[in-house]
Amino acid sequence: MAKLVSLIKRDWPKLLLLAGIFVMGIWLGEQLPRVNPKAASELREMAMERFKEIAAWMRRLPLGTGFLIIWINNINASLTAILLGVLLPVMPLTFLIMNGVLIGLFQNITELENGISPLRFYLSLAPHGLLELPAFFIAVFLGIRLGLIPYRLIIHYLRTKEHLPLIKEALREVGHYGVLIIIMLFLAALIEVSVSPLLLGL
Image (tube, rainbow, N blue to C red; front, side):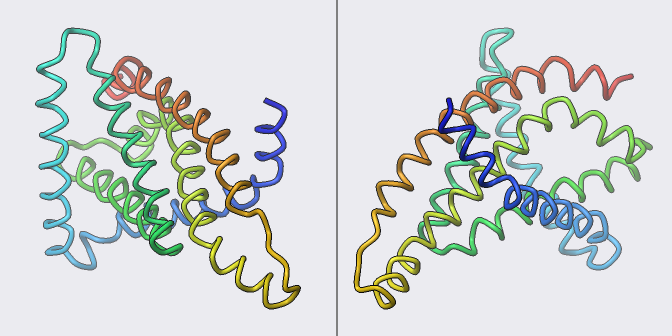
């Protein structure tokens, strides 16, 4: 626990920066239907297909266990962000922005088609988003951090001719943060299927 607290204290400015980039993605998504209606329509169709799949899985589950699909889906998204970073450090950032764009796009759509104001839309996301989004930002941060390891190792060796135990250090960080991500996403999924729909209805 103490190690996790120290990691958060060390990394919170970077996580805050990622949150700012995510908000920029949301703004881009809100503007997309005006700037490029065709791209917005295509992106919407892709997202709706995915949402339909998730909804179909949830309907097949026993009553009260639908949150498991949301939990697993969000864990998969976080794992994707981490693995993308291993391939190329910039890819988790792209993934982060695209998720923000999707949220902004659907805010625009729900306002136009259902008359739901931006305030009401974002308030409905807030209860589970307060847990889900920080968990996602941590996953993106881990992806970038893992992806930068080879470059950090090479630069350090060229400067000092010494090796750094970065891989062991990074794996320990993934372990600490990974447990936190799983717990936060579990609680967020419970809130998403219980509290958030009520707020949207109100």
